[in-house]
Length: 426
Length: 81
Image (cartoon, rainbow over all chains, first blue to last red):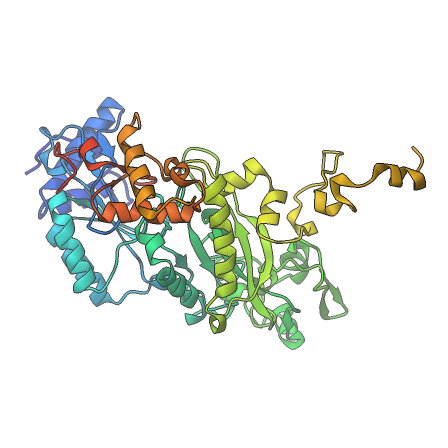
C-alpha cells in the first residue's frame, strides 16, 4: 500500500522509458524507507525546494571520508529518511566484478541500508544511498572483513583513484592502468581515508587518448597513455580497408548505411594536425606533427597501432562541477615513463610536487586547476620543474612584456650598471 | 626555536577553541607553526582526531575540523561517542 500520495512522481512512470519511481516503489516492498523517499521527493517537487540536509560528523572510526551525512529536514513526516547517509565503496580497478561479489554487496546493503544504489558515482565509487548512523559501523565491519573491500574517498581527501580496463582487455593501452591505480591507491591510503588538502583531489588513469575514464575532463591529475615514436603501420592492411575488406572502426558503426569506406574523408581529412596523406596507394604520416589523438587508429585498428615507446602524458587541473566552471586539464608533462619497475616513483614525484605547492597556496575549496588559473601556468611549470614548450601555450601571447626572473638575467638584479653602460651607451 | 609536537598540538586545540566558527579548514591551522610544512600540520591535526581532541565535519565535498564539545551532530547529541 502506498504510504504517501505521489501524483507528480506517478507521472514519471508513464512512457516507454525506465522509471526510477517504479524502481523505488518496487524497492519499497522490502524497504519501507523508500516510501518516505518518494513522499519527501513529492513534497520537494511541490515546494520547489530540497528537503535534504547534507554533511555532518558521521563516519566510521579512524576514517575521515567514505561516508557523506544526509538527513531529512522533515523527519516527523518522513521518519524512514531521518538519517539517509551515503556510503562510498571503492570500486575495483577497471570496475571488474564477479556476479558473486555484486550479490554479496547487494545482500550487505539490503541488510544495513535502503538497497538503493548509484553505480557508479562520477569518481567511480559504488554509491550506496540511505543508511542510518547506527548501521554504519556494522556495515563497515562486514564490508572490510567479509567482503575485503574498502570505503572510497570523500571530502577533502584524495578521491578513489580510477582507471580504464587497460591492458586487461585493450591492445591500445600504453601502460598498465590497473596496476598503477592499485599501487597508488595503496601508497596513498592515508590521503584516501583522511582529509589532506584544501579540497578534493582526483587521479584518473587512461591507457590511451581515447580516455575511457574521461580523465582529461574530470581529474586533477590525468595520466593518459601515449607513445613517443612512430605509429606502427601495416600498408597491406591499409589497402584492405580501402578495398572494403576490413570494416572501419572494427565494425562498431556497421548497423548504419555509411557507404563505402573513404580514407580521405574518414581518416586523412579528420586528422587534427593534418599530418597524413596518400602517396599512390600508400598512407604516409608525418609523425613529428602527429598529436597522438588515436582517431586514425580507431578507424583502422588492423592497419595502425600505437608506437612501441610507450608512456603517458600528464594533464593537470580538470574539474566538472555541476553549477559552473567546468574545465579540461592542461598538458603539463608531455611524456613520462609509467613503469612498475621503479614503483612509479617518477609519477609520485610529480604528484607530490603538486601537493606541496597546492597545500600551501591553494585557497579553501579551490581545486588545483583553479589555483593554476589564479596564479598562472608559468609559475606552475616552474613548480613542476618543467621547461615551457610550445604545447603549453594555448594562443599567441597578448601581453607585450616579458617578465624575467633574476636567475635568468646575467648578473641578476644587482649587476654593475656602470660597467654595462661602458659597453652599451644609453 | 622550533615548536615541539606537544606545543603545536596545544596551539591547534587553542585555535579550534577560540575560533568564532566551530569548524575550521586545515589551512586555518597552518599558522599554528609556520615553520612546519602543511602536510606535517595536516598529519598532526589528523592525529588529534584519533586522540578525540578534534573531529571531522564533512559536507561531502570538503572536510573541516572541530572540537567535539563545540559541535553538535544532526541527531542532536554531542559528537562524542
